[in-house]
Image 1 (cartoon, helix red, strand yellow):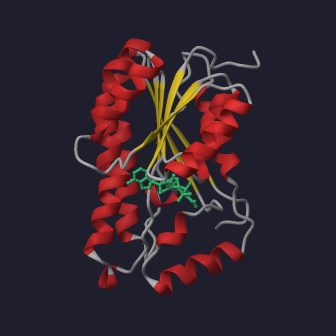
Image 2 (cartoon, rainbow, N blue to C red):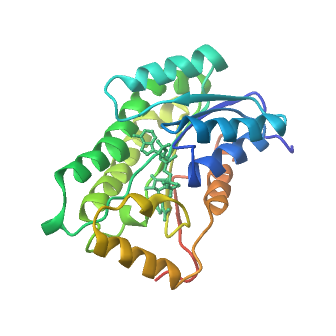
Length: 247
Ligand code: NDP
């Protein structure tokens, strides 16, 4: 059907920009009610207005997912509003690239807290409800979850972690008919690099991105939509997706 996700409720973290924003839109267009989460309330509000104008149902939650105890509260909020939970897209992330020798502890901790610990905690909080709905967990890792490049040691550690967590999780929950998908994008044109504190790494990223035609957020949203609209017997475990130009 044109609205394969009608009647379903999806939670998307990091929906205030980039891949999360595009994914929330795509899930909404496919018929899902969407709960959108991030820190920037204004950006969430603008997205919510777009979704509502297009006839979708949306619930914006301003939250820092790295804050202690936010996972259960978030899931409670979504359930209070949507009454069920079918899909969770753990997309929020930060990429604070730096060589190990120059890395700031704060950057490492932030990446581990947001990219890994928050994803783990939100998954655990959502799990009982996903078992009930025979739902779907989509975790956004990266090519950096498969290939560890110089300058990305801390970031790759979190993204390899997401891959490992997701695979063990899949084997724990498949018998409950809960599906687990890992998405591993290559270079996507988003705001992700804006927060890099290491000037050399920031310039290097901009150079690499300028040398290719990067993916657009919509390309990744399409991959997520593909995974979550398969028949119940199909568990798309992993999607690795690079720009054609990327080595
Ligand atoms: P953006 O920077 O555009 O989006 C990141 C999102 O994460 C924002 O919505 C941001 O919202 C949210 N976020 C960050 N920290 C927190 C926090 N503490 N609490 C709540 N939300 C938070 O980048 P992308 O769209 O590119 O990134 C999305 C995911 O894709 C990330 O996990 C990233 O690692 C991954 N990825 C991206 C690639 C790329 O080339 N762009 C390649 C491979 C993977 P706010 O600041 O409002 O809180």
